[in-house]
Image (cartoon, rainbow, N blue to C red):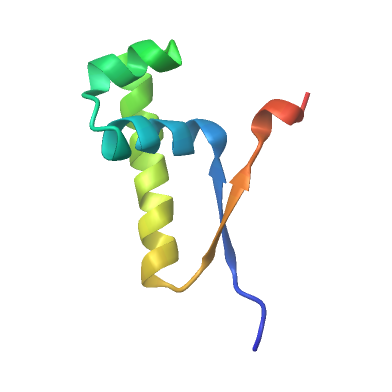
Length: 71
């Protein structure tokens, strides 16, 4: 079997999806927990969901990036 192509999901994207889609928080509550604006949360969610859908539709692996370690 060949190597799967990867989609790279950042930790903030994972956290936004966890709060909104898994914990069922509304975007205002989630943005407060993440200490970001609601508009920023919306942009992060859009990016994260697009990546996850791409991975599901196109049989790609999802790699979680720990961007906080890249200092």
